[in-house]
Image (cartoon, rainbow, N blue to C red; front, side, top):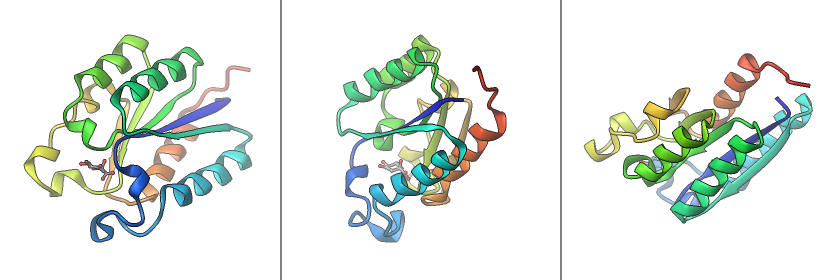
Length: 147
Ligand code: DQA
């Protein structure tokens, strides 16, 4: 594994200030920094992005797949609504781990369904920023280096 793409959807730019009782106090940049540290230690390149627009995420999933890079995806609320993201993962044959900060299954029922999960390799939810690091560890543990 030469690179990993970490893609974040709507409202995750607000982390730190947004409902801290649910999402905690770490900012998205804090999460980026902890992932960057682990990736640097492994010699893996990190592409870390956030957008409030569904189409950006579609394009980034396609690009990651074209580059042969696995994706850690927190699609935010688009998890529960986006057939376009489901289709992007399937269509581009992207290797995706779905992550959430909160335990979506212990929250409102509209968060219990994911359009990402059936197209993803696995799902990690409920561990705050650690969800991202656990996903990264899963990628490291299962990677077969191509070059
Ligand atoms: C989230 C959970 C989603 O239900 C919510 O819409 C988010 C954040 C999480 O990381 O816990 O924006 O993906």
